[in-house]
Image (cartoon, rainbow, N blue to C red; front, side, top):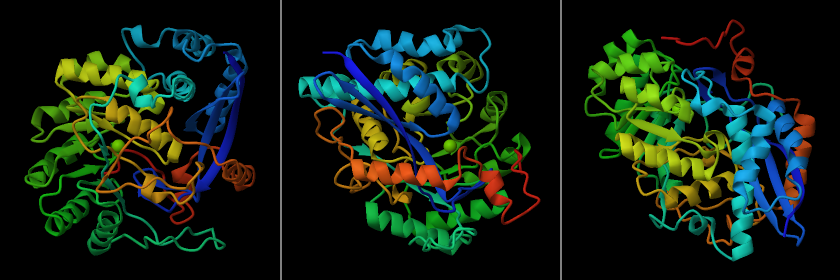
Length: 418
Ligand SMILES: [Mg+2]
């Protein structure tokens, strides 16, 4: 049994006007859906980024996978690396942007191959990965300051979340998140307003949700000195502080005076960053993401390295749909040292591309779909509808700063902001 066909379909789905340090989410988020079909008609699924660069890479690699055995992940890796070169992880100095194009292309296909392995053996992906370390994977409520609706999108009804520009509105957003999904921890996307205002939002959340672990993530929007000034205000508020500053060296500076663990999905984003991360003791929690670390097995390897160096592991997310959530949950269930509730944008997405519609996060957690494979199947009608969205939406690369300039013409999106 061999790979007979590989298809990559670009999609676009609705995304609310969520604010962050770069600007505001556009009305459409882009993804790619990967189908790897064997000569006996089984289809393995993957989900990845949907920008033009990713699509070009995936489409160039896809035909080179025909004829492969879905169990032969080393040959898959070589086929992917053939497009990008094989230097990355072993260089002495590693670029801050890592090897994202290469690792994300590998991840997109690796997940589909693992899905096929599960389908061929009648086993869920978490068993292919070594079995359950936990029955369910915990996720956190991911809060955003947001506008009530997109400015240039008159045909689209306002989303049910409403505006969140005040402390009270943010507490209401958190309440709705917790009521709907039972989340037991809360993350605030920050870097939007003056930091003292955002700390006040945290205080309002602490008052409304006593005992809930809280995190704040300004996406590198603060300077080292701003972070130093803010640090005493976090006493009693934070579980961890995520990416206050914008580089690994600056995170190392902050780590010298930080009273809280520092988490990142921005400065330690590839295996090549780990030696310097450890040398600087810059990060205490790595927010893994199988989409850019190189896949589900790479995520397991990262977790093991984290255990060796005493670095905690949790999970980052971008806007995504159910194939990604299933993959995140399978690997999360198979990692022994997943120490924190994972991030997910999933509650912000209304569209879905899998049969049966949205997966149900309950009590703040999700069990991996029972399989075989990832345990999800493609809804082809929805795939066609979301592909048509992509064809007509006019967005080919995410640009939150461009979108923000519709509201604030002089917006630069520069970092640090504060
Ligand atoms: Mg982050």
